[in-house]
Image (cartoon, rainbow, N blue to C red; front, side):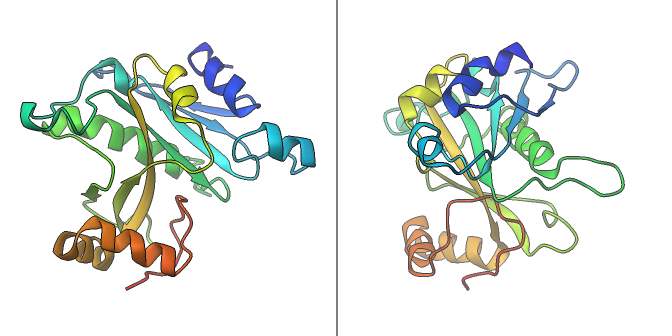
Length: 205
């Protein structure tokens, strides 16, 4: 197992079964670990965070602060990592590429490439859909469910916050921009949309 993810492994109660290594010469160097779903036994449910989900987590994003404007630093932490929970692994049939790990790594690098920052209730548009048979074309950042934030942050180089990543449709992002992200979150709650990275869920709009 990649030693970078040993603290994550201790927290999640299982080793990473896949690691996407940092890109060559990338600054910061961001890796992604995938932690598979495990047994749903009673003891496991009590002791293991989200045991029935595959969990992806970045490592290294927090080693460099995002360019948060001085006027907003009292609201948004500048050192974060990203996490995503999934019903299953989404791996390409032809090339074996792990779609979630690839997107999470690219997303984590975006603040440093585009001079932007991410925070809770923010959205980020994609240049194209998540996959050919998916309606998802953007991401929504929230706080992860069923996980202790202080423990998550302690697994990373210097994270002050760990944000969960949900894919959303173009219509959902437009709604959030026009009405506020809180209203989109309300729609998710009304439609019982879980905080998962699900490329194939139907749009709530």
